[in-house]
Amino acid sequence: MVDKDIILAIVSSTLLILLLIAILVIVFFISGKQRIKQEMEMAAAKLSFERELRQVETEVSEHVMGRFAHEIHDNIGQLLTAMHIQIENQKLDHPQLAEGFKPTEIYLGEVSQHLRMLSRTLNNDYIGHIGLLIAMQTEVDRLRALKRFRVHWPPVEGKSNLDKNQELMVFRIFQEITQNVLRHSAAKNLYIETNNANEQFELTIRDDGCGFVPEQVQASQKASGLRNIVKRAQLAGLECSISSSPGKGCEFKLKKPGTGNGS
Amino acid sequence: MFIATMIHINQTILIYSVTALAAVTGIIVFRKLQVFFKLLLLQVVLYLMGDRLGIKLKPDPNAWVYNVLALFETLLLFLAAQVYFNSKRSRLVLQSLFFIFLIVFFIDFFLYDIFKIIFYHAVITEGLFFSAISITILYFQFRKAKTHLDTAIIVAVIGMLIYFACSTPYLCLISYIQKFDKELNKKLFQYIVVDLAGVRYMLIAIAFFIAGRRKTLSPAN
Image 1: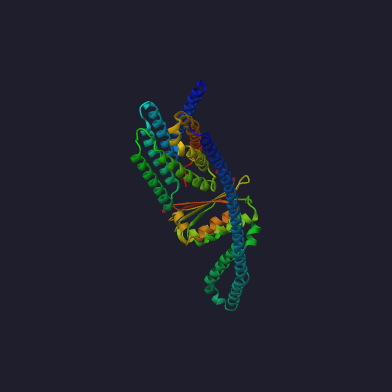
Image 2: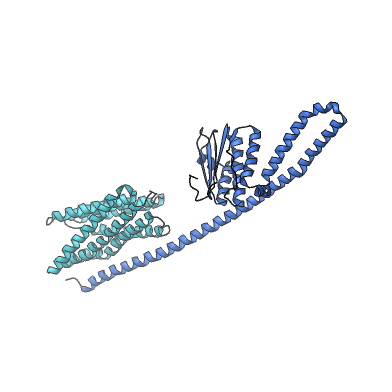
């Protein structure tokens, strides 16, 4: 016969192990929960820090751009006006030279106009005042004047369904994208579409240029512009998608969350 | 006596139903299962078939079926653990543990008659190793439990830990009890090993169900 104590030992040790397993699982569960909570708090803090950093960066760059805009408007603009007055005086003093001054006057007029447009697009107060859609129209006019590609943008009336900060961000993203098209795409056409109806906002910018592989470009060190676009969109609380492939152009889509495909 | 026989029959039916449930659940969601769970499913099917064969062979000596089953079961569980731990160092540790198990298994093979005696040293080694491995998996798993898959792994591993850790004290004394009281040994086997196996396969069935519910596949680790 087997000693009863042995059976008791087997049964009690089995139950004890079962109890230990239960304790172990509870301890692991609690510590795991705490760790996950801690990780989430750390991730939130990191995100908030990045957000603030980006905000500061944006404010600094807006400030610098504002300074440029004022400099162009106040100093260079004044100098060009002085040149214009000087030419007018010369024409009055020497009427026989009036014909010779004509091409210079035309170039001077164009330079003044381009600088005025550039000054406006750099000035965030001006953009805030006139609104996103008119600011975009000014930028489109500037691009059209460069005659590097055809810009297709059906006129849009009214105001965008975005707040002032979002408008400024979207405009800067728009500028970044058009600059990229200008510099790298070799596109012949640039298509811009806006869906601004019923509290929605969706901006699509498409070109028929050389295209690229988004993952490759984003992974490279040079793609600060592309990363800026994505980070600015995140900061503005907008959804941003980039689709492109070599030889097939590129499409950027900016969307206010909750905006569907249809209008 | 009648009650005892009835309990024994009920337990046998229960363990078969639970194991079959685990196998059927696993087969239904097979396409959605990760490699870790596929190996676990293979082990469940193997157990179901092996145990069936063992019972069919009675009253002839059938210990060899359980010995061979223990070898393949351990191999499959080690493979599943290897799939879970994908670092080189962990794999080396697991391979070393399996090698130690093989040594113990072959020592038992030379010491005892494979047809008559279950290699309980090897079974105890298997139990100890998988208790440690299960605790390690649980430790890592609870730190990242976020998806259905993580929960499924936790449920399956708790099942295995309960079985392997709780049956070890009895398995350590199985030979001693068998020598002095065969009837008692049969009862203890039924109440400890068979019931714990029932819990194990029930939890594995739940794990298969949870793992099969998830929509997308993601790496096990």
